[in-house]
Image (cartoon, rainbow, N blue to C red; front, top):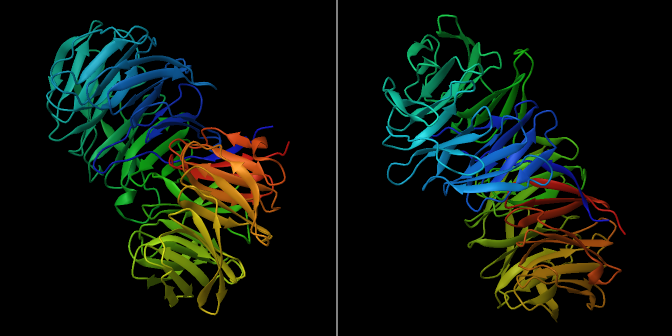
Length: 610
């Protein structure tokens, strides 16, 4: 029985400084859609561990929307392509159209689900296009914009109208179909970031970087009101979303607050409540996206944190979901509590997850340095980045305590800790091996070959170092020196990862030439060979606690699980575990494997032996 996906901890939406992002919701349920890299994420607000991810775009995805009946999803990317695919299990592709010549920033379905309007950046004049979803034929001419069009909206009731807004400070109004230009408003004095029709189609609102929101008549396009400047936003307004009854709107801004506005009968808006999601107070707390989905008020910050408020009970405490925005390159499981998973991405973010719960907080370090390697023991994390420093940070529950940095003179390539005496750390660099005890460099040894990967035995008595030439060098550690015991030759590519089995009877190694090998530690013979089922380099490797299984993760997006006592051909493969490659792997118990990858997601797999 192949391994089953048990939980997914989703990545957060990709964001960009100074721009809004557009998240959208399902017409009837509590699912929302957002994009990160080439992935489109379908997240259920009721149960955030139930995540579905669509990864078929060839370029970074920018926006996705459910069709009015909720059966189809249209998603767009930076190349100007729109893909229309099934919202259910298999995500079958229905149609693909090249709509604009540049990136698409927004798209909207017509209420009858027959037409789609998309807008964005293009060469020449075509910055907006409306087309039939089944044939791709144009349904109108959209003149009147001279710069990138940031948002578009389709009137949800007949007679159909389309409004667009963009970087030329204009709000344009089109009648149709076939659609043609009717009116243009230049009341805004800065980028107009978002425009949205009320659910009954009677009016629409535009919000802008000039901190203003203007309300228009939905049928004629005339200006009928605006959001009051009293208690208004102090920064650019990036996004707006209507309440289901059309009597209120939610806005989010660079001033780090979200506001709920009551829209009166004479179409003027005044602030009913200001919501400020908790944060660290830095630029990452700027709010760039929002959605009013049934009873949920959802906001997204520049750092990617999704905050969820209850519309019916604003005093109720909010929920926050967060995670990685970039490739989750390292993954560690705490020995004292294997249900706690730590992952890091190179931008310096360390996230703590709890199996069965999901997101449990970010570990804020005093020095937010970049991270290449991460290792964790009971109450300490050790990281290395792209400078010459190794950081040892003490861990107190959810908080990081004091951090010590050790300069080792050149950039670390790999780092490993002796689990039973964790003050001993071994770091390989381009020039040699550095041994650390605590925050002190006790020796720097040049071994005379190009080193790529290392592992140190838990009791600190032995080290294995892999080279660019594919050889494994075994050293005994006596005091602060290394004595070479043996050289093992079998790999045909540079060694990328080495791991001891938990009972120390074996160790496993993987290389850039897609092969993994399990060795017997005492006889130093090959224990399991022909582990040649990946199609690209091996990035990571993990042992199950009972020493029966070895899992390897590769750039080819697959995880392969081998049983040590059976031939390699009896493997279990998880295909497409992470779009773009698998970078971190760990077992939390004998039947549970956790993986992280290029798609910034973390996944938990149930492994049952045949």
